[in-house]
Every structure is written in structure tokens, then in C-alpha cells.
Image (cartoon, rainbow, N blue to C red):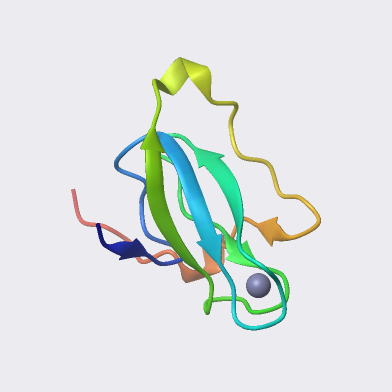
Length: 81
Ligand SMILES: [Zn+2]
């Protein structure tokens, strides 16, 4: 299973393990398909996400910026549709 980077679109709803640069131990975060992987407030784009368990969309609350992670719209590349 590959790792995902901030700004990438979430394709699979589920629980993701969050790997930080050395400042913080890894933790877990639930994300829904269609959202964007967030940035870390400390290590920014160094954070990586790894899918550890899939869940139904309606089992997951929408992501909101918190004390550790925040939305990083500035990094999202525009996708041609
Ligand atoms: Zn971090």
C-alpha cells in the first residue's frame, strides 16, 4: 500500500496512519473520499498518510482543521476535468 502526500485527493474513505517528520509520533486520522489530504502545521508537506482500514463514507465525519493538521488548499494542484 502506497503513501499519500498532502494536497492529494482521498480516493478511499478510511482510517489513515499519519507519519510525521521527527517532531511527532504517528497517529491516526479518518478521511473521506473526495477530501484532500491535509498538511501538518509543523512539518507541512513532510507528512505522509497510509491507509490502514477502509470505512464507509457515512461512517466518517468531514475533516476539520485541528491543532495538528490543517487544510492546505494552497498546495492543491488544479486538476483539469
Ligand atoms: Zn508534522
